[in-house]
Amino acid sequence: MSTAFISSFTIIFRESLEAVLIVAAIYGYLNQIGETSAKKIINYAWIAALAVGGLTFVGANYLFNLTAEHAEIVEGVTSIIASLVLFQVGVWFVSKAEANKWKQYIESKIKCAISNRDLLTLFLVVFFAVYREVFETILFYEALLLQFDSESISMGFIAGVFVVSIISYLILKMSVTLNLRYYFLGTSAMLFILSISFMGYGITELQEVGIFDTTLISIPKIAILGIYPTMETLIPQLILLGLLSLSVYKAFFKRDTA
Image (tube, rainbow, N blue to C red; front, side, top):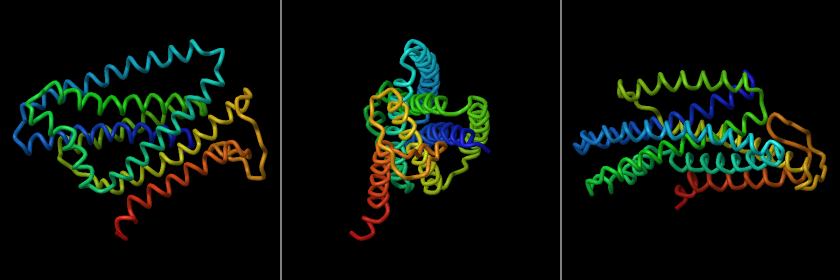
């Protein structure tokens, strides 16, 4: 399997499954407190989020076409933004690797709306939770399409949707539970790798148009991972690795020594 396929599969799998986990957790919480009548609002919310996400995808491609004459700048900026968002999402996943933290996160999002009997607030909570996943997916795929061939990306997307559809059915209809710790940690690792890759690619594109300088250094070039022999690409990537180490330490080691 190619890097493009694996990257595409990982992105759609992670983003889609997180949306499913959020909806399933809210369903479960509503059942727990006896508010099953609010489920219809949840369905309206996630369907609306997908519809708006489709419009966002069309709008994003339209904007990309408008800026074709500045393609390298757009590609560079998009990849860097995608890198930073991927990194942030990965750190967030690491922080929620324990099931009780995930449960607290979901309950904090909907408890206020339920206690106030505010269905609009509940709708908006679910809408924006799902739409965030859709928006991130669009951003990440735009960055992927700048680096890899569309055929492998499409195959990864189809495979990811197929697998998530099966898992979603098992979660929503069969009440199957996932080991969230391994799921969060596994997908976070891939997100961090993609973040490093996108950062290197984005800076390289901006170097080509002269926005960043190019200072060559003696390291191997691994373009498929976004590693290039320049100081300008290496330093931001090392900073990301340092921040990653810090987030992992805070999530798993600091509490043990407290």
